[in-house]
Image (cartoon, rainbow over all chains, first blue to last red; front, side):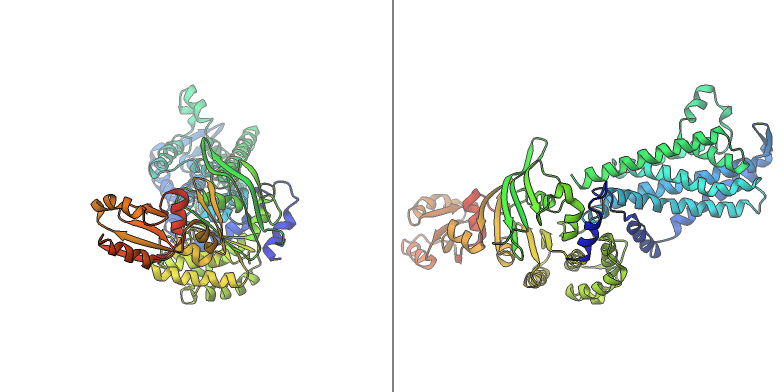
Length: 273
Length: 308
């Protein structure tokens, strides 16, 4: 009997062994190998983007705007947008990895088909790919914080929590992004993602408080994951942890669970039916 | 015969109203090289995917190594090496990296895979391409790499879906030679093909499939014996005269087939029949005597040629 059979047999009695072989790390290992020879340009631009926004809006427009009132605090405009930009870059990174990269592997290189011909299950593939997308969010968050801190944009020590918060919201976006991508068949459909994503971030409170909106629009924005992500990072950035923070966290827990469930089901329907 | 490695009874797969596989029965013995021969859309690939535990049957039963793929999918896939119709190699990785990561998908140790890789590179004759990215390989090399990749887990059964479709003749022969070597090593092969020469070269036993059904089963030789004559005389009179002369020819042997460009005459002695035709002063523009092949079997069974 070969090793491969013994390894598969050992898991045969576990619940869910049909969808999960406990080997998402093999998928992450694959991404690491692929990263060695891939170009760093898209990764670099993802990091540079929020810094450019910070310079343009914070130090450019910020000169005109001055201060912003947040609850009972008055803060410098540049400090106000910093956490919003960090959250945005983490979300953008997660979306990029879980949509365009996943689309290519689903439809062009047929990579998942190859993976699922092995004892791996759809949840291994989904988790492996989604966790990989988090690394991007993680590295963007660390890099951004490393730049923001010496510039005096970090008012509270709890801002370190922005790093796990960024990874957490990236998890939500990546798992949902992969699920949605699995329904797309053409590049034209994929283009729709960009159309949705940009306004979502521009208008979700990263650059100004959403209290400027009429009530109905404010309410609508509060339903969006981008708003919850930006608010969550802003909460920890300023150390304003309250029931709102808990709501944001719950929002992403639900998003992660739904996204993972959908992605796993879609991979099974696409490749194992 | 010992317990079959694969055993299907009444195996059926429907997609909505369309029946891709229609109540088929077959067994594959250990060490055997088993073929599914048929035109595109005959249900061969669907059958392969059900065996490979990546598609679920609608009804009927199937066991692979005594297990039902619906309940033991991952375990069955651990026994199999799959070579899909379209290469799905990892284009972002090199030859060696492809073999390495595929082994990791099976959960194999890095040490085991590293040793295995050397063996597989030699087998696939890809030693000089080890650090080359997959996109830079020729079609034949990609195919050999896909086969090598499928062997990384030391499978009991190697599943090959149209292994040489799209390859040039030389690349096909290299591939056949490799597969023949595996057969000698005792690996059970399950092959789909719409090339009769491939089926004759590689398969100990095969089933002829058409429209989801099995039309006949046996070794290539048995099938030819049962469904065709020893020899075939192919004659051409030009597309206009073919129709006119066909009735005369029909009277001269037990069976003829009129194809758009030529007439096939089924006989035991082709040369003798040809002489008879020439004596009648029928003067075909070209003539050819050949041995019967699986193509003739297929034509007899379905009234159609394999490649349309």
